[in-house]
Image (tube, rainbow, N blue to C red):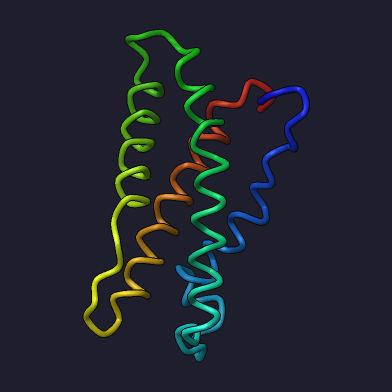
Amino acid sequence: MEANALPVDLATMREAVDRLLDPDAVPEALPPAAEELETLTLQIRGHLELLLPEVEQLAVRLGKDSIPRYCALACLGEARGKLRAQPSPVPGGDLAYARRLARALNALCDHFDALRPDC
């Protein structure tokens, strides 16, 4: 992380992920309304864009034969692909797209936790 950059807020990132991926938290909850879904999707995209370079920076410091490096770099590629993709125009396509982004963010949060030297 750069000296003038803000620390990564994993708690906020995971909270956004949970709002889309944790149906057991509030079993009677309905999927988010269109406006909330759009806001969540933008939030998760922003979190991904912030976290991608942080995880990459940590991963490339590991040895070339490192399994954690390989896994993190694969996850980075997957997340970048999801960011480039567009939601499907079918009903529910926006929700499915947001959930794919949320799963990618969740995985990157896990890699960030695992690769940080202060953990």
